[in-house]
Length: 256
Image (cartoon, rainbow, N blue to C red; front, top):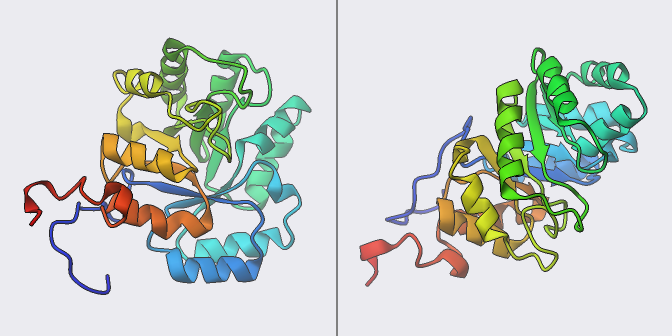
């Protein structure tokens, strides 16, 4: 850091499993990625190429390598997995992972109807070769999944081999964990946390207010995802109590 401030919360250090930040790349150019990692590599743990944007990304292998050279793993969004599955192309999908030498994969069913046992079977197969992040929740705002089903699915997916489970919110943060207004479904989150260890969950939280809510609930080292590249350092200031929204949260008895 550039100077000393006392009484800041202690942030976990990379490589980390808590305080994990997943950034969403929706189509950055190679030059933009180079600039991004130059300014932000200390703060980002993994990058997701949003939904199926990797299908259209120019110079994909080169772009992946820029992230890798900065020590940042990448993975393809779960929607791409679903696009292969719905077309009966699971083996083709595995070959794509091998072609681009990816060590992480997302398994989701937010856009398709997939038997949950079958989803867990895919997780189990993939987990033999790569680290699996599995997503729970629907991208359909009209489909409300009760808390007990979130818990059952998260438990089953972790048991099948997922490293962490992701709470669905989409890019905009208006489905799954959140109401269409962006408001957190507080009861859902709190019920999930009664059964699933917080370090095993990445909460998709693209909106600032959502990030603030989770930091206040679970602290500076909550796992958060779907963060826009230009919102990464602002998120770090929220985590450290260096933005107005959490300014008093970590001061405790140290205020003047």
